[in-house]
Structures are given as C-alpha cells and as structure tokens.
Amino acid sequence: MPEGSEKAGDRRYRTAAEFEAELRRWLRGEPVEARRPGTTYRLWRRAVRYRGWVATAAVLLMLLLAFGVASWSAARLRERLQGEMRTKAELYLDAALDVRRAGAPLDRVREKYLPRLEATVRELERVQADLAEPHYHLGRMYRAVMDFEGAAREQEQALQKDPGLSASRYERAILAIREYAARRGYLRRQRRRAAAASGGRPEAEGVESHFADVDSELERLHAVICADLERLERGDSGGNRALTPGMLACARGLRLMYAASTEAEHQEARVELELARQEDPTLEEAHE
Figure 1 (tube, rainbow, N blue to C red):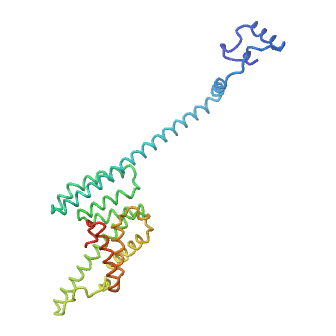
Figure 2 (cartoon, rainbow, N blue to C red):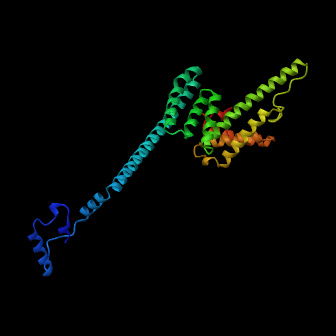
C-alpha cells in the first residue's frame, strides 16, 4: 500500500479508518482506491533523493546549451562578415580599377577605397583569424592601387593559411612575373651602362633568353612563377573554383611563355593569352 508509507501528508490516508477500509477491500479482492505514483511524481522523488547529481547535471546542461548558442551566434556572425567582405571587396575593387584607369592619382584611389576594405577585413580577422580569403581580397586591392609589396605580403599570408587557395596562388604568380620583369629590366640597363662605359657594344633587345641573366633572384622568381602556374594548370590548387575562364587561360598562356624555348611554343603562349583577353578584356596581366 504505497499511500500508507508516503512522507507527504497530502498523499497518505487521512485516518487509520481509511487505511483499515482499504486493507479490507484488498483482502476481499475488491478494487482499492490506492494508485501507483505517477511517472512525474516518481521522477521528482528520485530527483529530490539525488539532488546533488541532478544539480550538477543541470549546470552541465546549461553550459552545453550556452556553448551551443554561442557557437551558433559566432558562426552566423562569421557568415555575415564574410558576405559583407566579399560584396565590399568586389565593389571597391571595381571602383578602384575604374577610377585608376580614368587617370585619377593613385594616392586618391588608395585613400578612398583601401581603408574601407582594410577595416572590413580586420573586423573579420578578429572573429576568425585563420581565414585565408580576407588576405586574398586585400592583396588584390593592393595590386589594384599599384602597391605590389603589400599585395605580395597579403597573398603570402593567404597561402600560409590555405595553400589550396587558387586565387591567391594566381595572384602570387602575377606579382612574381611583375617583379621578374622589373628585375630583368634593371639588369639589362646595368649591362648597357657597363658596356657603354667600357666602349663595348650594347646587347640587342630580345637577344637573351629568359635565363640569360644569371641572377639568383631571377632564378628564385622564375621557379615561383613556373611552380604556381603549373599547379594552377593541373587544377590541384583548390580545384581552381575561384578562377574565371579568363584567369585560367591567362595562367596557361603565362606558363607556356615562361617555359617556352622555341618560337612555336611562344606562339602557343600568345594564342592562350589572346583567348584570355577575349574572355576578359579587363584582365590586365593578359595584356602586359
């Protein structure tokens, strides 16, 4: 008779007579009024009995819920900031290129667009510092405003965080090509000045091959260019999903150009670069 042993007064028999009547009904085989405690009541009794463990479990559950809510909120914030960064990066890049091509001073272009994108990128970095994509967008903006040192620095950081980011690998190759051309031009001028000073005959344009200038820095840049372009052409750098058809054609053409040793190979490279220009006439690297 569970009601006879209940500690709670409102759940016991009120008098001994009620208890006796219940016993007589049970002995005669008649239905009794007592009922087994409900599931809710039994669970409550067990919780009271083990209230220390229950309190600990409740605290852990609350912590897990709080962690889940915080993680969800952080993920939503990252998604929002990434979306804002991509939108602003595309908008600012197009605007900066248009203004620069219209002949505006580079300082004005830098002051107008670069700080806005930098602020967005730094805000996203505070939320998730291991993202590579912000460095790519910022580096691309640096290249648009002709800050090639800053562009190279950002793309290197992007590739350190994500070696499979094809857009950054493409940018690094383009920046290395610019540096390679500048280095070769400098060495060529140095040779001509030395030849003129000694009364010798200056070297003719285009006589030397890509590796005629023996220079360790040129060798390093050439290796970077060929390795990055070959990897892009193989498609093992993030699947090249971030590259447009024009960029892929340009990468193929430049890779052929820097590996060419015959006129036929140079011609094949020029065909690929022409395809890149047709795909995207604004692709500056295909024209240079």
